[in-house]
Length: 286
Ligand code: GLU
Image 1 (cartoon, protein in one colour):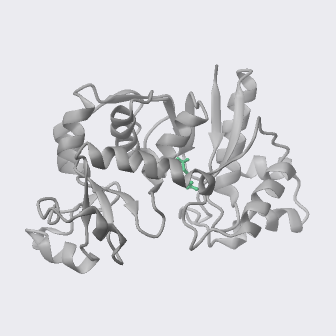
Image 2 (cartoon, rainbow, N blue to C red):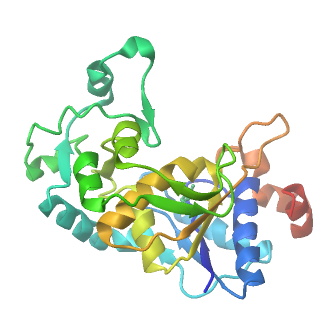
Image 3 (cartoon, rainbow, N blue to C red):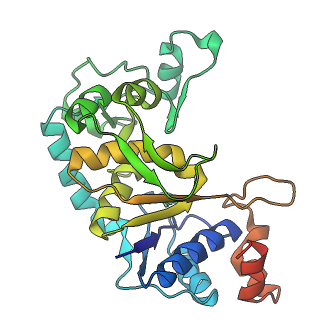
């Protein structure tokens, strides 16, 4: 069965880009007689606010969207993320990293060639991998748990791929294969748990897509590059890889990607200005 989701973070108002993503996922599910579920990605408790969660329900309802079954709040899943982290730690796939941003920048071997980037920020040079810092240090300020990508790829096996039914930022579509060597060199040792969250976007999204039985992930192209990380985690955790459908990003009149702080494009603003849900749909090309 086709089952997809909308998974906003309640850290600001939903804007036109969210309206597009939510309506597209919803319409695809309804057209296939499938299901559309909602998940509130509120692991970043320093930024998540209840009034933004309330706003999500209001905006989706105003747009005429209905969702199936209970809403999953990631803040209720922290114990299960922690359990998974413990098991990855016990398998020797994680290590504690105490590097600050400036340490990471200082350790980059050829800074004159520019700061190497991964889909998750600066490509980590691996400084703490062999330092054997004990797990108790995880409670130090700034300490994070990183995934040892080489060990992870070894455990994940060689068959690394996903099906793209939409398109990536460079028109990628169909079966997307990648190798462990690519993951080690291009993605590197990503952060799997931040101390303040007790988890990370990547770990939580993968676990919850599986928990909510998502068959198709419909989301913006800004997350396309993160998909390889998600595939590796799915393999490591023994979870099925859903199909992915990445869609274009809605841009403002000068072609800039919409951001959360772009209140002028907030759905609630359109509503307050007297627009109809149909006009909002038309504005995003639906
Ligand atoms: N929570 C993410 C966001 O609001 C979306 C995550 C996803 O769709 O994978 O950007």
